[in-house]
Length: 148
Image (tube, rainbow, N blue to C red; front, side, top):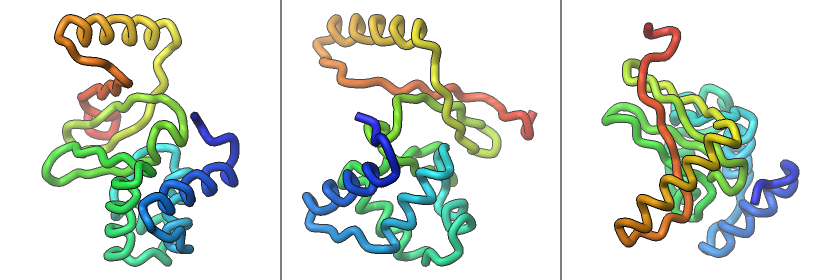
C-alpha cells in the first residue's frame, strides 16, 4: 500500500522500525527523505553526496537495519554495485533498467496491459512448479545512454 504523503511514509517507517526495536532517529529520517526524493535506487556514495550531513558508517548500518525491517530493498548489480531504494510497498510497483557497464539503475513503470500479462504468465509458471507467487520484479539489463 503506497504511502499517500511523506508524513504517512515517515509514520510507516517508524512503525516498521519500532517492530524491530529500532528508533527512528534524525539520521534515519534523513536517509528516508533522500531515498524518497531521489525516485530511483542509489548507491551509498550517491546517498552521501545528496546529504553531506550523513556519516558513511552509520548510513550503511542504518540501511542494513532498514532492509531487515522491510523499509528498503538492496539491489545487487555486481560485486562493485549495490543500490538501495525504499521498499516497493512504501512507494509503488515498478521495475528497473540496469546498465551492465556502469551499474546505474533507473526505475520504470510498465504499462498496465504488460503488468497484467506478466502477472498472469508468472502465476502460470508458479503454479506449474508448485510455487506461490506473491510479487515480481523485472530487471532489464543493457547499456545506458552514457555507456552506449
